[in-house]
Image (cartoon, helix red, strand yellow):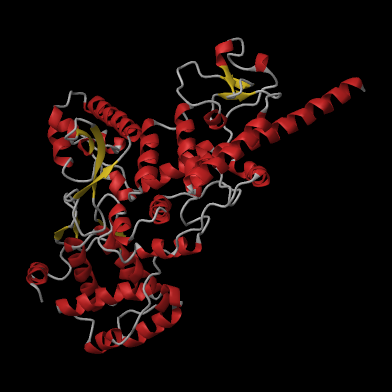
Length: 527
């Protein structure tokens, strides 16, 4: 028995069997009563023990509670939570009141080969139970467990299958999400908090808990030796056994993403100051959560309490909020997948898969991909190398029109003529092709530095005209795609134009539908 386990056992066993003892959780700022039915271990993890109490006999229950408390005190909250979930599942399946070889054999027989890892999680817990010396686990159980070879959790299965609902996003899906988030923010459909959460998750591929643990101080703009600015986010590490914000890894970001996060930092500080009804000092501002739990902050009564809570995760959003936000953005912008024709299925894990997949496609090896995804080793990075997706297929005229109804890349509004467009009376608002032909009107009053007209077709402010030469634009884009591919020899570079091509196809199809409506109306009028 190691010293850590010995001290913990002694501290617990000094207490009478059912007298509550306050136990400190691994995460700073959290503790629980040993015999409570629910343990709150951090912002994101709570363990419900009702089923354990219902099934286990008194001796087994006493031992289980003490061993799980050891895990809660010394290992991550998420790992402790996973053990409780797997143990609950075993009790539900077997209905047993104690741990013995028959129970384990029956439980293994109930699991499919793809779910044997459930028992693998429990095996480690039972070994620790035996090692700590608590009653309820005998040598026969340990010998049985040691003699089993259990299949682990399949790594990267969604990546291997290129699953359209769970695997990495396609390039068009990724662009659709990013553009959708921008459009939703411009239309005031989402808040700055939600926009920042979406963009930082999409662009970095970090885990939700890492996003939720960010503080204002983590958004960095520095200057290199040549006097050039650089932009990074100092991301807290996760899933490596560290505590709350104990280790970090810098992640380089674009100036655009840095600007969004900087705006969110100012927003968070402003709202916190308003809630506390005071002006924070600079060092307090830097410690403000980048994504605060505003409800919890509203319960803070003093600056002293606020500073005390800053050392824990209690003022940060829960990690589940990140996933909720991503899904809300998809719903608000009605973002579709061209692969399924349905609303884009999204979570932070898909962005991680996308980051690894794109890196493998660019030729990076396992070490680089592991570093990019902040893995502690390369065992999970190999799935991306072994399953490098095929190059983007050739996009011809027919394929563009097939994808258009699903991708919904066109975000503007079709108008019958220039006179029907917002700002249609302003000649400077006209959008022209390189040959000088007018294709539509820009409804945006501010300055736009886009290289028109190509980006316009995916912009919410673009108002294409019904009689505009959109077919010519479509053919020009297809030719440009082939030209770029021939020059660079890289289909991935050429595929950057794909979403614009699909958007133009969408406009052409809308024009055809609108002409049919007009002709039908004229026929009725003449009749």
